[in-house]
Image (tube, rainbow, N blue to C red; front, side, top):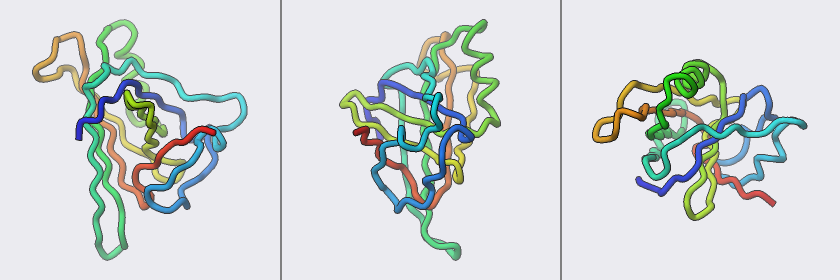
Length: 147
């Protein structure tokens, strides 16, 4: 679903406390779970290019969520490509901010999303990278509600 995403941020999962025991679809103030002195880092996301899907599945292991986020990153060979390369394989939690101001959290210390990126975006200028965040977890997307 297209949500009008305006900002994409990440933080190393080692910099947060565990909240993976929250029930599915919970709300939280993620800042309460960040270690002192750390904060989310904004990625140069191309606003309104994001597509977010969440599917709940039942199997022998119980109910779990598959979350997939696809979007575009502004392309600058000297700056952004090295950032994207460092994010591949890194354990991060992601925060998406919608144009409306609503925020979603993808991942936790226990359930770490997979980040990948590619060199081109179909239908967009060659100055952008495509990227994907995928998560399989028991808590699914969480809503961030700062106090």
